[in-house]
Length: 162
Image (cartoon, rainbow, N blue to C red; front, side, top):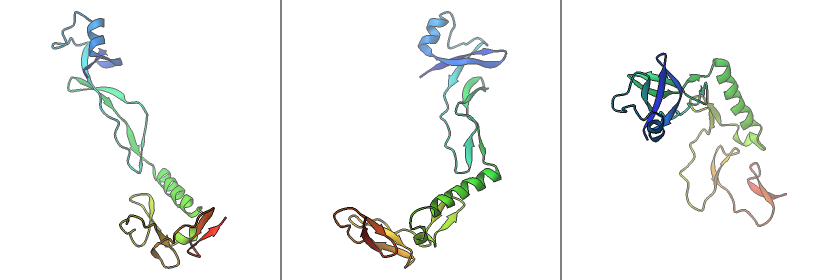
């Protein structure tokens, strides 16, 4: 997809237009030798946002870079206060779960902003439901769920009727 944009006072003006629309709107302009009030436009994909980053805007700005106009995305690192708040929200949500004390041995990982177990989860095995058992501080296979309306009690390590 080929795009063009108008340049006004040395800056991108309005929005890019498709090649076909450009030819229709400006039939006398040679796209291989653009006058100074036009430039080719290249779309730049929105970048991934890191765990401790935030986009400043959901829309890019346009910038001339080496004679080609491009999308420029703006993101920033979270402030220390924002980072602490995000981390605390993850910890609070983790601790607010039903039977949360089952996972009391898990710790917060700053690098991933997640709670992690003291022992890595084993590789899944088809047909087995492996969960964390806080009483043993290890991973265990859940007993088979009975028919009917049940929920799992991590402290009893058994299914209980609702």
